[in-house]
Length: 389
Image 1 (cartoon, helix red, strand yellow):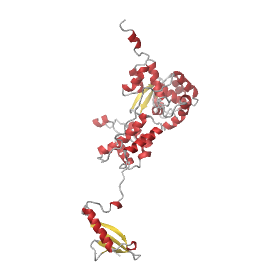
Image 2 (image 1 turned 180 degrees about the horizontal axis):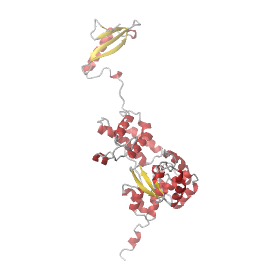
Image 3 (image 1 turned 180 degrees about the vertical axis):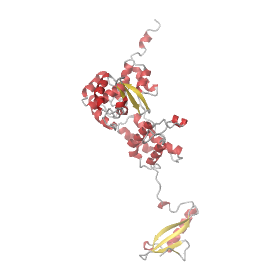
Image 4 (image 1 turned 90 degrees about the horizontal axis):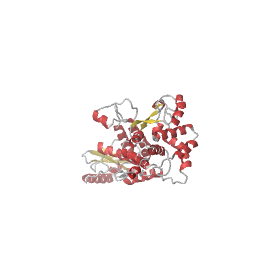
C-alpha cells in the first residue's frame, strides 16, 4: 500500500507494509528550504504517530537554529593523503611529451617558454617512487582532516629507527609537505599543513667517513662476487650515488674514451664520469655479453633495485669496518654512500682543484664541495711560513 498522510498530524506519513507493520516518516524543509523526507521508524519498534510528529517538530527547531537534524546519519566524505598525492602527481604530468610513459612534467623554464620538449620525467618519477616507498604505506589512507604535527613527528622518528640518513628523511618530509601545499595553494584546500613546524634534521658534514687506500684494497680483495665487485669499482671510480651506478647501461659506457654517462636523479641531470683502469678492464671483457639497453649491474632490461644491491654489500661493509659501532653512528659507519665520499676525498688529497671535484661530483653548489677542501695537501701553511722573508 502506498504512503498516506496522517489525518491528525501535519507532515507525518504512514506506510502500511506487506507484513502488516506500519512505517512512519516525516517531511520538513531543510536549511536550503528544500522539502526533505525522513523515515522515523516502524510501529513494531515502538514508533507512533505522536512520536513521529514530535520528531518532526524537533527537526524543524534544529533547522531554525542552523543545525542539520540528520548530520549523524550522513556518511562523511573523507579526503585521504593518497588522493592529495594523486592530484599532485597528476598535475605534474606533461601530456604532450612523447618521451615519457608514466609520470612526467615540464620544467619551470619549459613552462615559461611554453616548450613541451623539455621534461623533468626523472625527477617526478624519483619523487613518485619516494612517495610510494615511504609515505603511502604510512599515510596513504589517512584522513587529512585528522593528521597532526605529532603524526609527522612520530613518522620522522620511525624513519630514524630505520637508520635512514638525515638527508633522506628531510627529503621525505619535504615531499610530504609539498603534497599538502600543492592542494592548499593550487586547489584552495582549507586545511593546515601538518608538516609546518617540523624542523629539518641537521646534517653535520664535518667528519665524513671515507676509506683509506689500504681500506679500499682490503675491501676489493674481500669481494668475490663479480656483480658486487663491479658495482664497488664503478662507485669508487665515478663517485656516483647508489641509484646512479644502478642506472648505468651498456650504451652509456665509452670504453675508447674511458668515460661513462651518469644519471644524477637527485639533481635531475646527466654528467660524465671517468673509468679507472681496473674497472675499464672488467668492462672490456663484460660489456660484449650485454645488449645496448641492458643495465651493467644486473644484466636485465629492468634495473636492479636499491635494496637488492644494498643487501648484497652491507654485510661485507659491516664485517670489515663497522664492528663495535652503534647502528645510529652515522658519522663513523661505512655505508654504500661512503664510496662517494671516498672518491671526492682522495681527489682532494691528490691535489685536484676544488672546481674540478665539483664537476666530477656534479654538485650544483660549490659549498657542497668545499667540505673536501680541508683534505687538500696545499693548506697554505707552507706559503704562510715563507711570508716576509
